[in-house]
Amino acid sequence: MNLHEYQGKDILASFGVKIQRGLVAENHKKAVEVAKQLNAETGTSWWVVKAQIHAGGRGKGGGVKLAKNLDEVESISKDIIGMMLKTPQTPPEGKKVNQVLIAEDVYYPGDSEPEEYYMSVLLNRASGRNMIMYSTEGGMDIETVAEETPHLIFTEEVDPATGLLPFQARKIAFNLGLSGKAFKEMTQFVNALYKAYVNSDSSLFEINPVLKTSDDKILAVDAKVTLDDNALFRHKDYQDLRDLREESPIEVEANAVGLNYVKLDGNVGCMVNGAGLAMGTMDLIKQSGGEPANFLDVGGTADAERVETGFRIILKDPNVKAILVNIFGGIVRCDRVAQGIVDAYQNMGDEIQVPIIVRLQGTNAVEAKQLIDDSGLDVISVVEFKEAADKVQEVLS
Image 1 (tube, one colour):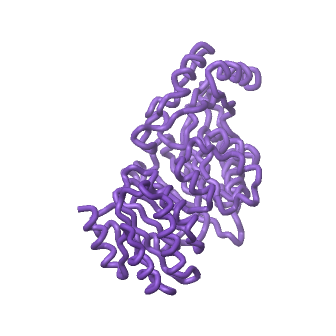
Image 2: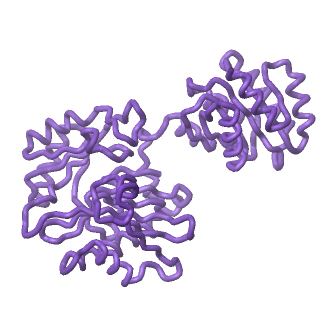
Image 3: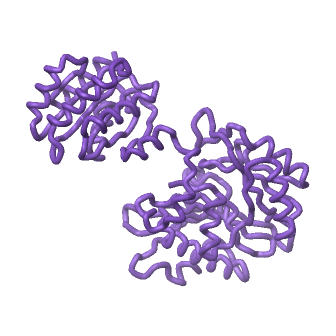
């Protein structure tokens, strides 16, 4: 589950991570109110207005601007709220901005120049250990840094048996070139950040940039936080942070009825039971010359109601030109799935305007194929993987 910047910062702060403070506003009038409140609490006289969407690169799209007085806070907020913000990480049409974060200015003058760093905490799946990735090149796309200057990216893996050790936090501060007060602040920052990552059951913390202010404070100026959905049962309060406006309406609908659905950009819808079979089915679609339009796992209870719901969700995507149903009957019997397909097709009637190819293998597969073949419906029944690929290619040509 992705969080907005302000939500991620709240979690960080709750574990002792120092952050750039800010308040969220849903309209330009509220933005002025919270700017005044922030001035009273922090003394800041300049404010940063940040669009709150689930995507990076907001500044490049005009979603992050500096306001030097309250009039600018109002005018900038008015321009940003409601806009369709386009960044490298949004769909082509962009994402609508529903709220802004009014944050304190932390780039104030002092004894030294502010410096920006990159830091993230994530799981290294190759080693099975959590990893802190960091760089002196903060404020830049980490992908660009990795491509052009890979020697400037450092990693520190954490043994789950011991947790983050003191020398590792000091090593990170040293590699970032820090000393004195900033060195001490960074070690505290790293320890608090790792503690927040582990105890919030997150799958990603990305802070870009981590800022060393002109008076050597270390702050999280941004926060991209992704929570592990499988651990949300341990964090009931975090579940309320989900912003459904930022998610695909089709995916939200599928999730509400217990279907595992992810929308893709292709033209062939697929309905499968089991994630592994779904991945194989998407490969099959690509080999046949098509592109998968979705990942849809109906699970082990592919009855008529569930199949019908799956069809309706797939057909909400106007790019779908064909549907491939690929079911392996282990726990679920193929003939029951076949009956579900027939019933769903009859219930939906003219709503189905694209070819449907069905491959059923496993328990009672022969009976299932016969049931579909005898139904008189415009459903293409196949047995082999290759045959399914040929039929997909045929209906798309």
